[in-house]
Length: 162
Ligand SMILES: [Zn+2]
Image (cartoon, rainbow, N blue to C red; front, side):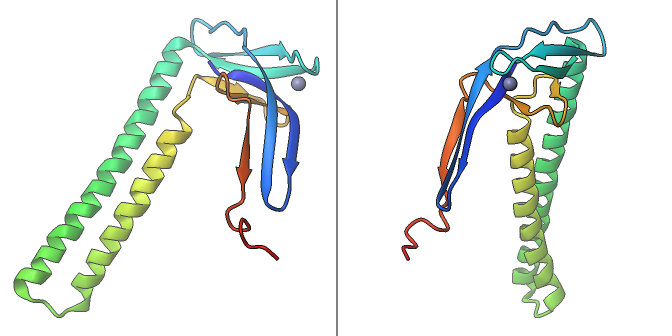
């Protein structure tokens, strides 16, 4: 399970941004079935935070659905790649001058990249799916244990030097 994250500090400058979170383990028992709503008190600010917890069975079903979605996206990307390569083969074999076949190759390669990217992002986003949901607007978030913040430099301005 992810931890409850209280935002301690957030800084955004022109060339970098950073955030620091105070994490606390969530003591929320899983319901026997379906989902339940629990209220957890944030140890940092003392405010109550509402969480939704899925049962183990519901979490298994959700993970299975997410996996199926990712697999379907990767298969669609692979299908685009195959159609693109086959069409390219046909163009080469028949020495076609028609633009339509060429555009099919371009479209399919584009589809492969876009679908592959979506599949990858989707998979990454749901990698830590634990059946926990936090009420929007609670001022808190859920983060993996040990993930107490980030510091990133904005590449577009780094080295720009005015
Ligand atoms: Zn808090």
